[in-house]
Length: 443
Ligand code: DSN
Image (tube, rainbow, N blue to C red; front, side):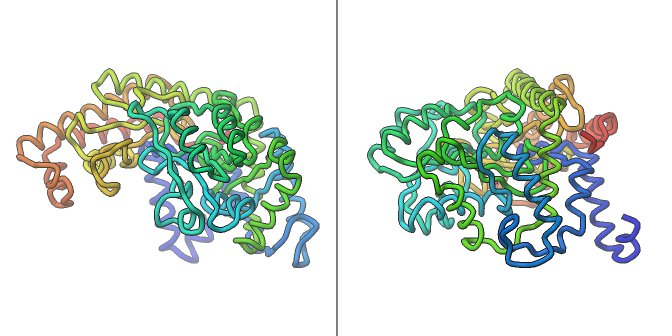
């Protein structure tokens, strides 16, 4: 960053500090990952200067000789990697991509059906106050009491409400989704099936999570989670979807532009192309396998240490811890962990008695730690660090006589953290661990 340092030391300094934070902490937010240096270079390139509204060879501006090639490369790589006939690589991220699919296939006011936020669904799957709820009629399904999807319940609801589109694929669901069941439900009522594989795309590419390709009409994925690319999204039309509606891919392209977007971010599209090439290497399969192995090892050790996991474990990259047996809020634990260098997010658990801002759970995952080369041994260490802090928080909270309402106050949480000695002890161990596994960004 030689030039940036000279021309804008303030921004350069903040970037460097953020790089340092990533280097010295355990990034365990399951939707985060560490993109390669090659992806970063594509992102930072002068492709970002170019306006190229339209699609390759059908643009509204001149000067597209090279960006046409860049976008075509990304499209072809996406099609090959996911084994689909059509791909759109222009959506700026997952939320606009989902909205584009809805507007491509539905009319305003049509019914969509997605998993509720508290059960692990995404905001854009029909949650209240989102555009997916305002412009469409949203019906939400929940997981069962055991935290698993209950396909018969979903089928019943679908038959009653007759959505025109069903969304499957989530942000806080640790288990494998039975795509076939969803396809049969959608078929029964003549609905489209959109699968949102944002969290699990990299696992699908690695062959450690079932692919929805034979079952879905449309597949949406962001490109920066397990897929390890830049922030962006792919909308993939399947053979099945195209046989239902031969204009499907055309409709999706028009829903992106002119529907909801203008000029594509060509630098991002180049970065997506680079990430797709990386994901097609055999080493990416090894990576995906290790992500799941690591999550399983982490989950097993957490259970051993007395944590309650939603669904009891994981078959993906993601774990949801229900903290109700620890009598601590997600906020308290997530902040204490952050002070110890373990960065994850607080999260609602299914049927959470607490409000979304003060939920009863935390969500964590292994994609970024695996990108640094960590394996099962390190996952077990991390689970033990977590237990040390949580046990200490419980003890000190009791000594202070704090109730759940106290935990909602920032100053009281601070008081609690000052008493929790293990935070400092774990922080030094985390530093040691991160030093042993530096971020290399070379895949
Ligand atoms: N915000 C993302 C996540 O953390 O799962 C989903 O968009």
